[in-house]
Image 1 (cartoon, rainbow, N blue to C red):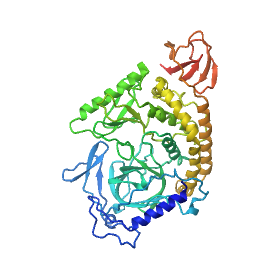
Image 2: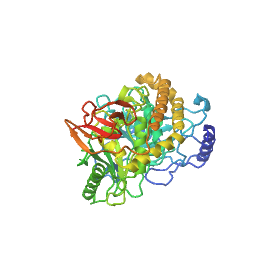
Image 3: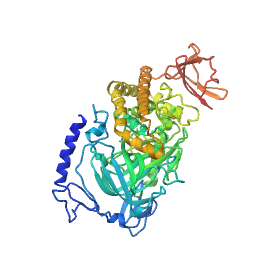
Length: 551
């Protein structure tokens, strides 16, 4: 369907809303006294929330006198916040530019522009930390393509390396929290949302294109990226990405029963309340989100650690994990990360996986959602996007990536995973590659004016036509390169041996010793059993997979 068709549908929906909309209180579904006149289509929020002093509450604050509780990443926070208004709109179809086809170069000629988000914090306060939520009013102008919205919200800072604690007025990322589930931009309803800053030079398309790839490949709970112009207290803050907050929630990892589920994050920041290191691979495992029943937390934490250690043991010692892992989803997860060159998962950083029921032997680990894509598209190699060699071997990662053995084993140890991975690649090349390449053009055309505006404030955004073309060319060349070098079966592994300070798989003596990377690039010839000249990584020597690692 083309954009004009969606426009006609949206106009019709808007007309319907204008004759039926009422204002509801956030605490219930009873209409407030003043319903909108049938002749009026402009929604105006009550101004009293902007006149009161800033309402602040810390993330660990739980005063006994508050009556209503708000979920907060596995625990609860409380607030006496009672928004003065809430506007309920009809459900709309999810839109994230996926449906724009054959559009003209200048989308503004069709009346579309990038959405504008205004956040007015009570008392004119500003976000200065990652702990205290501030009460605010949020208004969204959908730009003619997405639905408008007005509501009350809480806002605070977020992020690790992207959060500048020394300068709160830097281009910082934010966390948004609503009392009730809402569907901004027509997305799946949820309470928790994120504003990504993309402050690295040339990074303002990386998350959008990477997440688009994840959705095309159908990685579990893949995020949607909505580009916006953000204003806080009337001040322009730059081009941001609005997206779902990763967690156990309807707008992210949606489960029928969350009481025995948990979302895990492998991340070297290792900063969650509940965390552990795995017995094998020494992985930093953070229990990112959970909603355990009262009195079951201790038992569930034991189930989680035991279950993850069981996965690591089966992977390292048995090479069979299909009884423990959703193989199809693992293949999709690994394929997308390889395509976009996301080495973050090899640190590891932002590697998410979850299990719906850690007490059930039939419940399997599911890898995903994909997250944190600012160091992709060759940025790891060249500190830019789409300019590095697209033939770079993802599986032959540098030695400082401490998680690379675990990631390599996930793909190559269990043959069923590798076979599923090849099927995912075949489907992507036949059905989705061109759509992803087209999306690079569509996203740039839709956001180019916003990029230029961002450049005026943050000095990044004037050369994104080149950035978009570089990323598009890089993706096309990389996809064809990887796909052309896939084999029907993963390379077989020989016996483990040790040579000096290098641990490797020994190639049989009757094989040749020509050495290749996993992508088929010839390196050099090796003498039998000597690998000291090779940097740590994965190689094919004499037709056998060789894992060279620091001992």
